[in-house]
Length: 386
Image 1: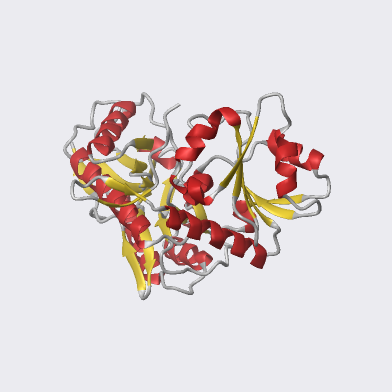
Image 2: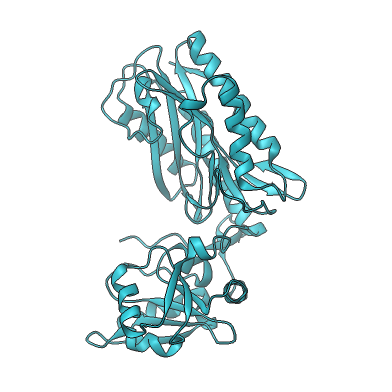
């Protein structure tokens, strides 16, 4: 398994990522423990994944059945339980010097090693991706403990990005924009969707991405499936084609969508595209600190509904982005979390007409003190490809 890209800040004179300092990780861990206490938790339990990378800089080479868990609790030093054979790797992590390491040997009970770090009747926020066997092991060892997923209990843990993270997300967005500009010169008609998807993946890597997470190419009727997986359909003259693609650059995500037309689009495709463009613009203009997340969804949905296509907008309008391409906050009805400067998320309204075509336009945006800034800046106008 390939080790994930390093979590980094800024670039040096040669444009190479510079690692975060240990103090950056220490501040994040302190803030996580303080936030946990303010929400009534005894602490935070973090298993391998983006939260562990965010808090310590540590990403195990392979995530296995062996327990690795970071324990953060108010008034106690950060402590991470690791398999003894993986301790050398853990010690190399940037944040390791701010963490006490406790190791365990194969054949021993890792939950017995973890139990002294927890309160017997504690309530903990735990990583969403924690293995069930590990959660059950903790419950078996400490039956008085209770657990809540981090997304439910502390959704804002990684939601507000610092300036160095914003630099990474801006660069990732620019790389995705550059890939889109180049794909416009590629031939679409007479080629399979998977061939264009391969072109997109190559262009993302050309423009700085170390990891490609998805390349949706939904042509003609396939565009009416928002998460269509590129297949063997031959793209035809007159098709509307939804292009949704992204991945990681210097450890941070990109995600953008544009809809192009193979040859001149018909009147209905133009009409729907313009409705979606207006919905996306209206939602962007509504972004302000203090606005509830659900309001961004409502604004875009109102434009599409008033145009008569409300039944064909079948997903939330956006999701957060950072170390992963989907993370809190979510721009969806019922989400009352208020926007804060530094939040980054997608705005991606769409209209999907089953059996015919789909249209979606997506940008990543960040909340600023007085509004919003786009991290994707390629044109929203309908582009015609060959």
